[in-house]
Image (cartoon, rainbow, N blue to C red):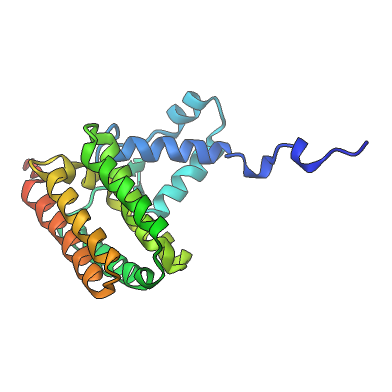
Amino acid sequence: MPLKSEQVPNLGAAPTASDVILKFIRESIIDGTLDEGEPIRQDDVARLFNVSKIPVREALKRLEAEGLVAFQRNKGAVVTSVSEPEIVQIFEVRAILESSAIRFSVPHMTEATFERAQAYCDAFGRETNVARWAELNWQFHSCLYEDAARPFLLNMIRSVNDRIERYLRVQLSLSKGQETADREHRQILEACRRHDGDQAAALVHTHIMHACDSLLKHRPKATPA
């Protein structure tokens, strides 16, 4: 008897060793376990996962493309640092892309969209675990962009958010950072419920740049050598 497709696991969908290592290193950078400028030793990572250095190198190359890792002479792979001017530019790109996405999305939003967004919004407002704030923040924002039916744009937004998620966690941890974000999220959602795309876009743009200003104001300054 021939095997049915549902009886066979889809190995093509299973994460590769490179995927697993990439996720581990990315999370270590985002949560601050790996600090800016810290080297990532391929031998140590390969030993940790009991693999050759090939999937480690593949993961690091992909993280380099995301802007989280850089290869330096005599140091190998290191965690990138982002200057204040670069942070401002990244937040500006976020504001442009996400305000455009929500403007495209609002005309197609349904009650199901609003219910999902409200659930994420409420969960964000209740959450006390700092590590979960950035994840819930992304879930709230991204669900408001999905009705735009522009996957390439959403992927670009996800990539930009990955680049600064470690800083977003810092910003949300600041005094009243979560409280301010929660209030602004609810204002954005209310504009979406009114099907006011222009107002929703303006609120998203302001919300993102407020977060940038707050981060720069409270970000620890580097100590001179």
